[in-house]
Length: 301
Image 1 (spheres, rainbow, N blue to C red):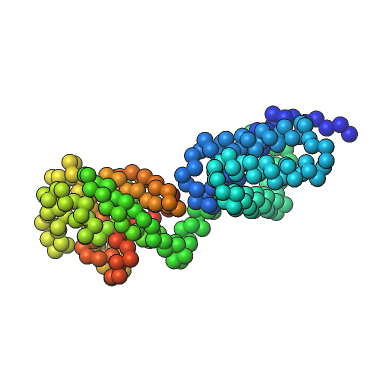
Image 2 (image 1 turned 90 degrees about the horizontal axis):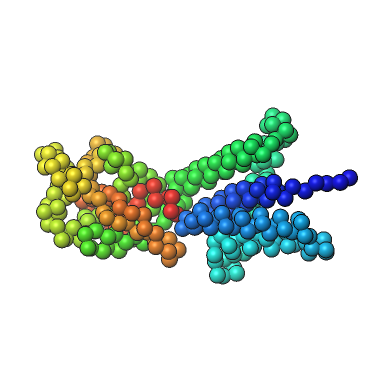
């Protein structure tokens, strides 16, 4: 029997699958600083080398299989994640194989236990693209749900180093990642982190007028709302409604901090400007943390 090898279709198919697997591996390893172009280059190198290996195979079958299933995967990981340590690259490669194994299991389950196999039997390239894209979105959603569930059960209560920059002031604090903090600024819907009074006071030292506006207790808040509305446009002071255990219909004053930088695995990630809600007191009695991060920060974790 004579086989016809279509190199272009083989390359594109592997390129798409390699990209999906690398992307999911990056999410599992929380490598959020990796740019999309790195994933594209990694997938391109893997698909390209494998295609060449199919056209010009190594004579010894065992060596050829080792090259196709181990060496190429290792090269993909190096090109994509650019880790200098061999140990780190082996770890990433292991996660890549786990991802591929789980993906294959899911696809087999879909094929054998649903009527979807009828579609796959007559699948053309367009159907493959739709199916591959759908698979990526489903797995991405599953990873996202797992992260949220881990946070809600307390398995992800991490203390993270955060650097706050505001009007020439720089403040470094320990922050608690809390998936239960879903506060949003009511006008724009932007996420709101929470800082204690001392941290907010240090950031606002250069602007005493604004700090006076921050020094508002909840008893007098209704009288002061009119004043705050007048400075909202220029100073971006906001009143944030919230509910918590033992306290319903609470109100918190917040201001927009110019830059919030989080430190993940000794890598500083600039998340841009963000609103900081001010808690009138200490967030942690032992001073372990002075800031509570919004759940939206999970994108970078």
